[in-house]
Length: 73
Image 1 (cartoon, rainbow, N blue to C red):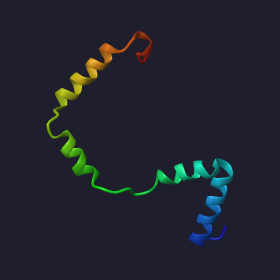
Image 2 (cartoon, one colour):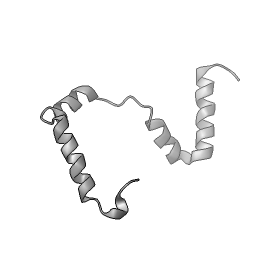
Image 3 (tube, one colour):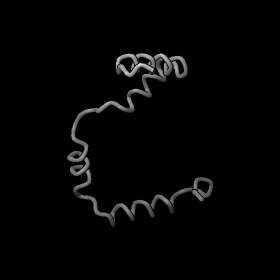
């Protein structure tokens, strides 16, 4: 196989499009895009007033409110 990155990318897109279709290929490629913003700062800001005890209490509350069919094994 030719190691030229342009050729590899082009061939890869052909294979993906053939197997997944145009929409599926677009979804697949979006998984690897960098995105924008600063995840660490945003997360820290969102969680600044939440303690680990708050998180644990929320999990317990959700587990207690689940119907028997939804409980996980």
